[in-house]
Amino acid sequence: MEARNLQDEEATPQASVESTKTRNGIEVKPSKPYTHSSSKDGTGGRLRISQATLAIGNATLKTLVQCNVGDKRPVLLCVLMPNKTESLQLDLEFDEAEDVTFSCIGPRGVYLTGYYVGHNRQSIMQDDSYP
Image 1: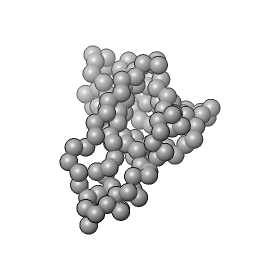
Image 2: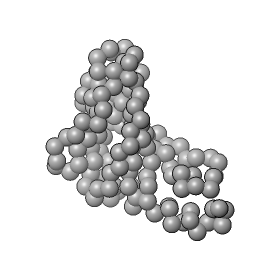
Image 3: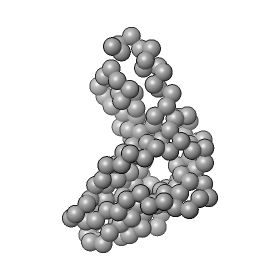
Image 4: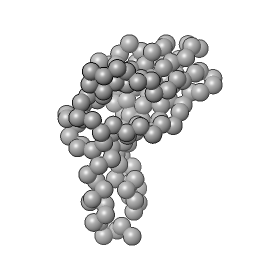
């Protein structure tokens, strides 16, 4: 499994639920699926994927992004086309106890970005800085 993990916490706190989310990203490479295991990540929250972006490359053919949960059949999430649709906003939420495997079919990799939604909501609501 070859995936690059990109992580960047928001630096400026704001009085909103959004400020407690850690932004995460992975690069899914062709023929190298990435498996997200909610039981191993320790977040206890739901995974929300918010964007898919085509990786840099010279290939001009489309790249399909799909996922499957556990042993279920894969579901197509989006199709990215060089010079046409290189990035798409998504609103996908995974509240699964089973592993979620992301893969791409095509000549180029895809960056998936998102965040976790979950237990942090309670603590933000109790924070003194929350209006």
